[in-house]
Amino acid sequence: MSDPLQLTVLALVEAQGEDGVTMGKIVDRLVSDGANEREVELAIWRLIQRRRLTPNGFICRKVRKPSQGAETRTYEFVLIPWSPALDAQLELDLSGTSAANR
Picture 1 (cartoon, rainbow, N blue to C red):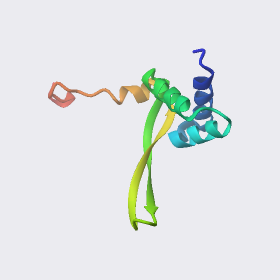
Picture 2 (cartoon, rainbow, N blue to C red; picture 1 turned 90 degrees about the vertical axis):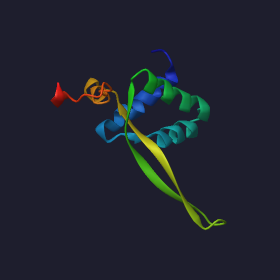
Picture 3 (cartoon, one colour; picture 1 turned 60 degrees about the vertical axis):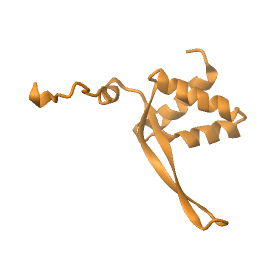
């Protein structure tokens, strides 16, 4: 991989290990370092597509707008480095038969 932005994203996620890091924190960190927001987001999605990052949960935040007096929930992925074991858990048996019935 020769994309320096993707390498930087991977390094940030790997530094967090199994605890993971939210997609928003990665974007905020790299934007504060001068990166383009859209390019960082695309780099993260490309890494997920290439199976270099794995979504491993999410964070729910409640956002309250004072003018509306209502709360809105937002959800954000927690990303960890990809691993074959975690990837295998995503395989679904779509045949309609479970392993116990085989």
